[in-house]
Image (cartoon, rainbow, N blue to C red):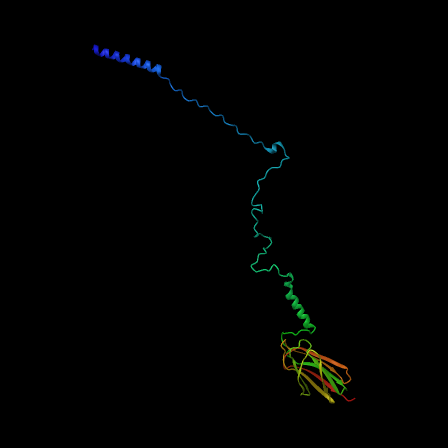
Length: 238
């Protein structure tokens, strides 16, 4: 029992001594000090309109309204049509060339109207009556020519159904022949034998009496081969 009690006291003494020594040597580590950072205050944006009305407000540009950035579509009502074409163009062409066909057509018609060009259109397929008149002249002088284009037109002349000129070639200048007129009715026929290379048969005839007086002149234009112009002359005695 004595031994137990001694042991307890000894243990208690050792414990107290240890605590005293540890307490004198131990220095606690102070906790770190954290200083709170001050927040920077957010500057207040003043409304420019509140200070002055002279400064215009800034408007954010709309890129869809800026044609330099986004060109407007040409597919709009009322928009001008594009000049784009797949047809080849000659930048060096004469602008007046587009009017040439119409001018040539008008010139062609004008030349035909005044008898300077033949018509290669529909051939005239009908006989022509040159008329009838009375004369005391014993003969007529007939002058003939192609009054448009010399292209090989040929004409046959008959008097009272008898051929007196078998094949007159229509040239560019006048040629002539004489027809003797017996008393009474003389039926003189001028027949187109062919059509020239430029179109139908074209011919002009001028009739003069024995005194050189022009009786009349006749012509046909674009006449088909086989058709005639007939002149009836009644010769009476002087």
